[in-house]
Length: 224
Image 1 (tube, rainbow, N blue to C red):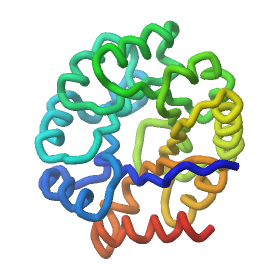
Image 2: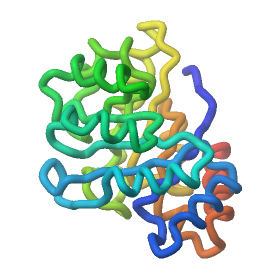
Image 3: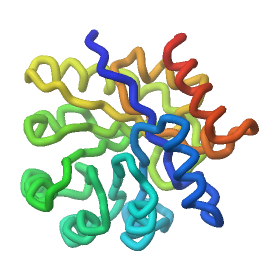
Image 4: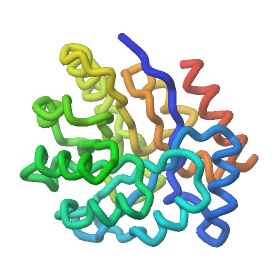
């Protein structure tokens, strides 16, 4: 199975917000490929996190792409706001978009890369008709809403299916995994066909610091 370049996307949900700017700088210096920013509204998921103000603040420090994941209902109401705040990629959930084609078009017209996310129970087939519109598909490997959850092993078959679907469609597409990624699970996700690894606690909470967490994750991904 074709493997795209491995990319590590530290999730700032796990960062220390009392020194967020410094932690972003450390993640960049350690070789982060992008920063993952989870926007939660307390309606689609049972948690409230951050919004456009935080994205704007991170954008002032970041020199790498901002991967903004909208876990919110009616995301179409906020696309322009997040684009203007500095998002590079905006990912919306298929479960919140009855008019998914329209929302993905809106993201691209706002000047951002478009992504689509799938909850653990949502089948890969639900995005087949929009694969030509997206640069990445985010497979949720936990039930969204909180950091620090356990990786759902059953999602790996969906990762592999999406990689096959992309190849059949002639799409050189990123497949992102989000939830429970650490030095024990990253190789499982990688061997299933994923290439963007969203990781929070194992990077920002690593006993040896952010750089050590990043290095451990890369080693583990390369040595299944």
